[in-house]
Image (cartoon, rainbow, N blue to C red; front, side, top):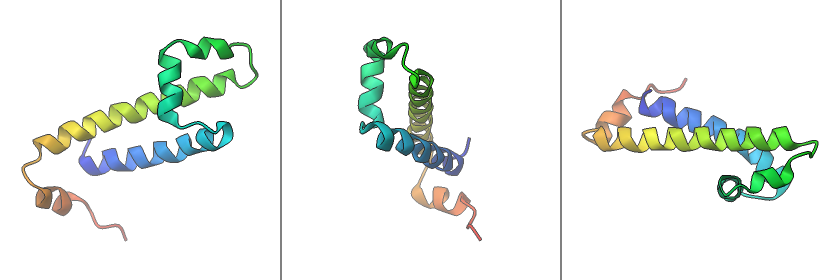
Length: 90
């Protein structure tokens, strides 16, 4: 994926993550940390349990995109190359 595509993907994911953050009053990073520590099982049986699984999956996807973005940036020779390779939105 290009750097631009990664940024667009991350922004789309962030928009979806914000829905969960507003609904539950918890930042995605903190929710994900709790889920990784096994605290998600504490929520088993709730009507919204599958929303929590979606939230966790979306945040994991965002982390993967971020890691790929960071790697792509370190391999890019200079900022002008990145800027000039991005199409200008119309």
